[in-house]
Length: 396
Length: 141
Image (cartoon, rainbow over all chains, first blue to last red; front, side, top):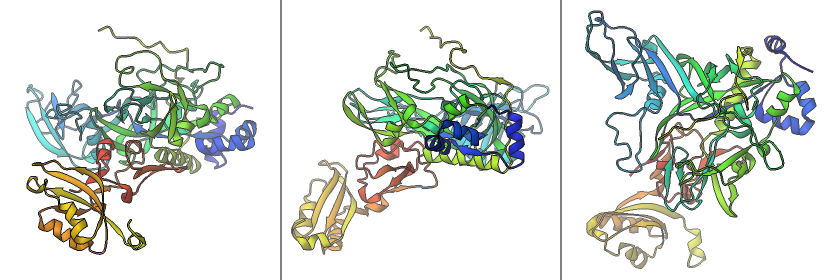
């Protein structure tokens, strides 16, 4: 049996499609078998809510009288990139105020960055816009200092060049001092282990060969409707296998996503600070997986017990790019709260919110059941394992 | 607990802040000796000639008198349940605070995977305020 996008959309419009969250589909497949689950279910919804540093927003502020070219722009004292046309700028989630103390007193707090300004904008809160320029015949003004809100400006287009990481390391610290990383505070001597995916709910873990996700896939983004724009930067999809040939779950794939910030919500775009590391943005992302055939359904049904993260030491191996890992651990084990590494019991904690991921998958399901969200057939599928160029190393 | 009667009495927990001038005075001894209180020091950072803090659990009938004595000696006394709070509207239930919390006051409930904050187990170490990416944990000193 096969299904087409058109057939599923017709059923969605008629209110007759069966849409389940990934959690519910996993449970159904375990209970009733894959064949039966696939026969009954048309779409599986996924979700993830986690820090995604490669996020940001293109802004167009509108023109003042007289006009200014805006060669330099600051939003609440955080610089935005302006190497674009007049009054366009890109504010990145990890950008920091120019006077931020950074890590001069380690660990730095990084209380506020571009991600926090994006959260303020999407919440409708006023943001100070300051700009300077050199003055031209057509753009004579040299400076402006004003207050904007999201409603006041022409466009705000969230464009995140690397989101939705398919899988991520389980980070530990083999060293003898506490370290402050983008994976959180890691206590010495295997004091804790941090991981950051929503496991069986995570979008790219449920379509590891990219049979359904591609350019133009309509998604839940930041509480609004967005699209997959392209593969993300550092998209190096692979399917690691255990010694017995068993698939351990996809790894390395990423998404570039785009959407209208004006539709989004501060519940799903939340500024974040990692002590000693920097500022970023928590992004809520959900992708529908149409069950086109049983193969797609089989991957959508993979559970936390069959999805694995590699354990990596962040005191030495990660920063110095020492190859190898400390083994693989399943998301079922990670989510249990404790894992064993080198015979030691190590408490685990996530950086990715499972309750919020569940909420996203359920919201997307509800949108589809209400006929508010139809599937799009990708213009072009993203490259899967073996189809993308390998990662390059930068010579120092 | 010394005898059965003690276990019936409520235990109250406080954050104490000592100025440099009294950091070397045996004020906790006085709570035991003069006010007949059972004290349990949960956390302390007190050095001579320096400002210090202590998290103290106190059990006994004359708890209020003991607190009044401490205040009279210039110790700032704050009930512990006011010291660390979670701004629930900020918390995204990610869990980044749960493995670094030394007492399990912040922990993940299963299978909901929601993060619960049990103030009774908090010892005001403040590691969570650093570990929380959305700054949901607030210190009210």
